[in-house]
Length: 256
Length: 322
Image 1 (cartoon, each protein chain N blue to C red):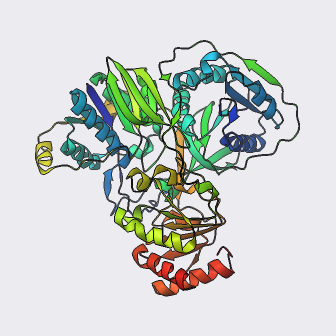
Image 2: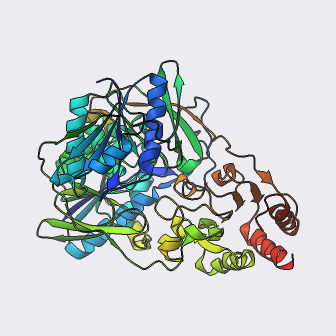
Image 3: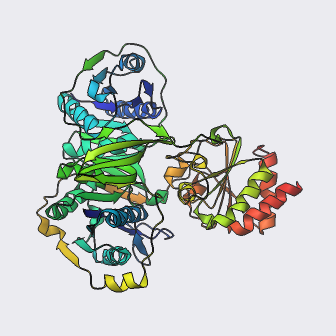
C-alpha cells in the first residue's frame, strides 16, 4: 500500500505571535516552527497502516526552505521519503491554491491512500484533504478515527458531532483526514534520526508545477483579537489572588 | 439569480441548531447587500422542515429531495448542491460550520473553482464589498478576508458568532427540487454512540475545566480538588480527553459538549476557538493561565495570570476556609 501523507510546518504552539508590520503575515523573527500536530496524527496513522499492510509512506509539504526540518522529522519517525514543494511565501496561497500545488506534485505518485490532519493549527481552514480528493477525483472521509483496508475497499470509523460515530466504506484510492488524538504519537528514535539523514527529500519548485494562480481569498489584515469583555485581572501573591477571586465570585458575580 | 443561498442542516427530520445561526448570518449579509436569501434543505421527506423555515424572511425555500439524500454522504451532498448552485447562480453560498459542512463544503466550492472561506466569526461592509473575520493561530490572531473571486463565493459560519433570528411572517414559497442521480462512493452505516453518558455537563451549574497546562495526568488531582471545593463538575479541553486522562463525555467544545453554567473556571486552557464555542455562554468565566496573551482572557470576567500549580492550590485553600 502506497500511502501519501500531506503535512504542514506551523509556528510552534507556545510561540508569542505578532503580526508583521505589513499586517499580512507574522513577524517570523524569533519564531519557532514544528510539525502541525493534527498532521502528526495523520503520519502516525500512515505508519501504522504500513506496519499492518506493508508498503511505503511518502510525506509531502508545501512550504519555504524552513519547512525541511519538519519533513526530516517525519522521515526520522519512519516515513520512507519526502516531497518538498518549495515556495517562498506559501501564506499567500489560499486553500484551493495550496491543494492545487499539492495535487499536481502528488498525482504522479499514484498513491493508494492520501492522509492529512483534520486542520492546520495556523490558518485552520481544514480543507486541504477534502480539496485534494476533489482535485484528484477521489472519494474522501473526514475526521477518521480508524481505518481497515481489505481488497481495495476502505472501511473507516469517523466522528460525528455530540459523541456519535459512524462506519463508512469506500473504494481506494481515497483521501482521509485524520482526527487528532486517535493514537499515541511515536517519537523519533536515535536510529530513526540517523537513518533519516540518508532518506530522499525531493524538492519541486512550486512555480514549475504549471498551476495557474486564480483569484480567490485575500487576507487583508491580521490583528490581535478584540476583547469581548473587560477582564478584571487579580494581582498579588497566589493567596492574595485567590482571596480576591473568592470575594468577587461571592459578592460581585454572586455565583458562590 | 442574484442573491444568497443558505444551506441548512437536518438529520432524520430534526434541525441542526446551527442552521438558524447560519440563517442569521445569511439574512445579515442579505440586508447589507440588499440581496434576497434562498434557503435549501437537503434530504428526503423534508416537507415539514421546509414549511417551518418558510416563516422566516426568505425569498424562497428549496426542498432538495431524493432517496439518495436520505442518509448524508459527501458525494451525494456535493453533487446535489453543485447542481442547485449551478441552477440558481447565487452570489454567496452560506453554510453552518458543522462537522458535516466541513466534510462537503470545500469540495462543493472547489467544483466551482473557489476556496471556501471557512469558520467565519463576523462580517461588515467595506464600501460595497463584504469583509469577513475569522480566527487564525488557534484564536491568537484575527484576520479580515475578502473575496477576489467572482460569484459564486462560499462561506461557512462558526457557532455562536451570529444570532439565530426569530421567524417574521409566514409566506416564503416552498419549492421542491429533485437533483439528478449521482455516483455516491461512500457507503455509510448507521451512526452509533460508544458509551452511556455518566455525567451531563450541560446540566452542571459550575464547571472547572482543565487544559494542556496541567501537563501530566497525575496533576489532574489539583483540578479535582478545586472542583470539589466549588461543588463543580470537572470538564476538559480536547487534548486532555485525547490523551485518555478524562473520558470524552467531559470534553467541552465544538467536538464535545456545549455548556452554559453559572461559573466556568478554565485552568491551563489557552482558549482556542474550538473550546471557546463550547463554553462562552457561561455567565461568569474565570481563567487561570500563565500566558497573559492567552485568548481565554478575551472572554474571561476574572483573570489570574500565574502558574496554575501555584494558583489552583491557593484557590482551593481559600474556598475551603471561606
